Amino acid sequence: MDTTITPLGGDVYEIDTRMAGYSGITAGYLILSDRPCLVEPGTAGSAPVVRNALSELGVGPADLATVVVTHIHLDHAGGVGDIAETYPEAEVVVHEKGARHLASPERLMRSARMVYGDALDTLFGELRPTEAARIRAVEETGSIDLGGGRRLESYYSPGHAKHHVGLMDSQTGDLYVGDAAGIYVPETKDVRPATPPPDFDLDTALASLRKFRELGPQRLLFAHYGPVVEVADTLERSAEELRIWVDAVRDAKEEGLDLDHAVEMVRDRTNERYAVTREGADPELAAKYELLNGAESNVAGIMHALNRHA
Figure (tube, rainbow, N blue to C red):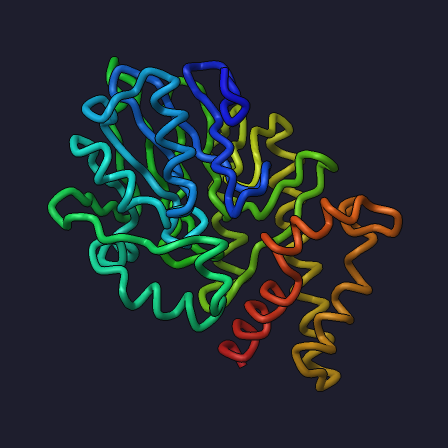
């Protein structure tokens, strides 16, 4: 089997989407049920990798029933348009606050280019539009038919993004957490927060984590990156890290520090919490996760939230 594909049991397959050529940054998941479902296609640049994986798993252009995204950030949903074009029978499911951006991505792409500049093309590529008639918007909850009585239930889970949903598999108890529980680093078992601007909100994010705990999942499937069976401990750690980062940024803000100095202060306070950034850590691994989940982006998102509340 291709090295991008890892069977996880329960007819679930992890696909390493090879974002920007890296391994282990962004995972998509294929649920190979009676009605095959792709969760998180990844970036536009990842579409060929995902297509090859689906083909190897026996899913042809007419076979894919559904594509679901937890939210519309480009590392998760950038490839939706390309995948929708290849699999014309697939319905595309997204939260209602993200639906119009998949149909008309121009505004989203303009915003992304302002943030990433020329790096956008290397990191993500161009989100292409999906025909509006093929998009199904879900609200507080939703249900996706996987066939044979199996369902993927969606639960609105903002905090990281206002268009974020978690997805629970009725058969396996797998919970696809998107970015709502932060970033899981499988090499070191670290859990780091994901708090980019403009939508991050601490109280909302913590409420979403409580909702995830109440669902009683058997396993968490992180988009970044992979499966975790220590459900309660990991969700607790996710909440703890959020609080620590917000407290650190609040202290920096009260000292009147600008963004660059706030980032340095937060790094000083938090780096020792993670094996991936501790002194003596693998520099390649640290660089990979800084690209994916940079301290500057997290601090900027928290600053934005604190300013909004002020």
